[in-house]
Amino acid sequence: MDKIKLYILGLLTFFMSLSMLAQQSVELEVAVDTTTVRIGEQLNYTLQIKVDSTAKVMFPDQPIFAPFELLEESPIDTLRTLAHYLYTKKYALIQFDSGNYFLPQQQVLVNGFSKIADLIEIRVDPVMVDTTQQKLFDIKPLNMVKKNYDALISRVLWVLFAGLVILGILYTYLFQKRKKELRVLELPPFERAIEELKALENETLSEQEEFKRYYSRLTDVVRRYLEEEAKIDALESTSEELLTKLELRKDSGLLDLDRLTLKSLRIVLQNADLVKFAKSMPEIHTASEDRKSVELMVKETREALPEPTEEELREKAAYQEFLVKKRRKEKWIWGISGVGILAILTLVVCMLVYGYYPVRDTLFRYPTKILTSKEWFKSQYGTPPLAIETPDILERISSSDQPIKQFRLGTFDSPFYIDLLFDFPKPKPNTLEESQSDPKQADLEKGQELVNSIISSFESEGAVNIFMKNDAIILPSGAPVAKVYGTLDYPKREQEEFIRSNFSAYLFTFEQGTIIVTLMYEKQDRYGEAIEQRIFNSLELIKEL
Image (cartoon, rainbow, N blue to C red):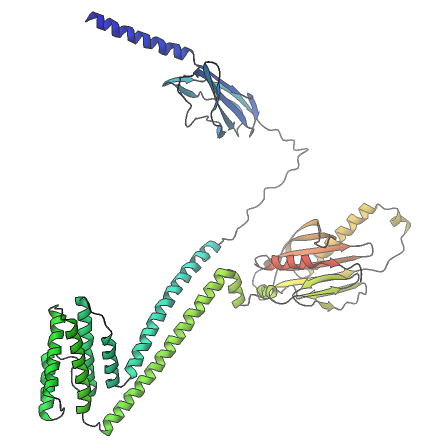
């Protein structure tokens, strides 16, 4: 027994020794590319462990580097040496507060035993800003963004489209069904009964429910015919009551029916009661014979009826006229309903294809939508000629100032305002002072004078809160042009408040003068930018006539 204990103790000592040797052969190193970084600068952190080729290594699944933020981590890089493996894993870190920090120790598991990395001190320096060299700007105010309902409107339109398609299918089915019913109701009672009996001749019977529907329709045909033609309360009578009434009519001589016919009708009514209430299933040939018996009953009743009086004929004619008017009224109702469904379906399809707002604005005659849809005109104005495409021909504005030529479409109150100004004053002899002035300074002064003239023209019309920017751009035709643009508030007629509007002025400057194209429209207009872009693309200076 002592030998066994000694043997077990020896094995345990052996394995523990192996484990200790394995742990001693593990080398964990940690490194960073720098210990001093600036705020917002990336820091690279590397874990590298050297182990035996049989060791199982596990890096942390969710490493914690607080207060640093983890940007990304690379896959494990494995390098094999003669008797060892070298595992490397890299992390990208960042910190947005200055100060001295310690990177937390990371734990790596080797064969279930943990190895802890060393602490590393990191210095995060602030970024110095030289306010004397760096230009500072005010904080931009909040801009109110209009909610976008396009996605919601699209979903609603698709749901409405699916609902209208289902409604249209249901409408077509009910319309055809009702049309058939009205056509049958307009027939005389005898012809209607025969037609319904002919329809029963094509029925296929195999289950009890089918026999039940068959006999219900069969008895309804004969009951309705007797009530309409023989004036017998047949629809509200039981089978026995109906047969009794027919017997009384025969005995009184009001309805000369054959005894055999009445006997056949009794058999039919009894079979119908058994099928409807006792759930019996007769033979198919029995059902066919019963239909023939009812048809014979209808024909014999017609021959046995006395000739109608003039009063009965008038009542019948009045009833037929009532049915015709009723059918005509229902036709109108069904027709208007169908046209309405088709119109709404067409409208929804157009909105799905062309968009909700374009279709809506077209229907409600949105002013700028009308401008985009109509035929545009491309014309040349002034000297030097400027080609421009506009929704309508620009109107020439008469002026007492001869050097100025002005063409205009609309006013500041219009949905879209276009103004084309040619200002080419007569040349004046240069003085000595002007000839010695700096050309660049002269251009700047001229440009400022033009901007001031644009502002003055807006202010003269009552515009306020004018915010203006300028830029140098190239036309699609290749000609350079200066653009002055921005926003302003303008008191449009029939509006209680000032309307925020966009404006753009394109300036063609020459030594002899200036051409200014001014555009203005409401800031919230959905089509204003598209109209402006189309006009801008059409601008072209005509160099050769």
